[in-house]
Image (cartoon, rainbow, N blue to C red):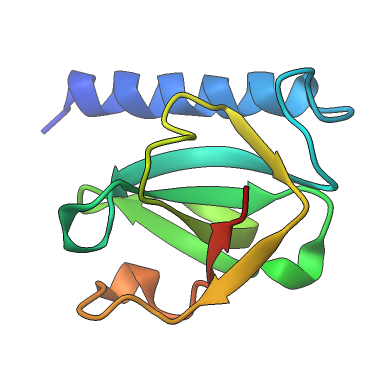
Length: 126
């Protein structure tokens, strides 16, 4: 069955990713740091606190992993350098890009779904 809502949602997310990719020759004025990422999507964070933000790392390939991501049971896409940023304070809720320098690696979330298996989790330091 053809699902117009799902198609329009995926198309709008794809267009956001394309627009962000075109505009990312360097970090934007609202973004500071040495590591650049493009936001793919966000979900509620561990234990319902904040958000888990799925990003594709632009300029530090060793940080992320290649992963095919699923969103609401459907394939969202395959990305080369995926990382999950833990955002308990919703600081990055409306960002298309996130740039940072300092971060720390977090353990995998307990009870995380199979789609999260193997994806590095980080906490961006202020």
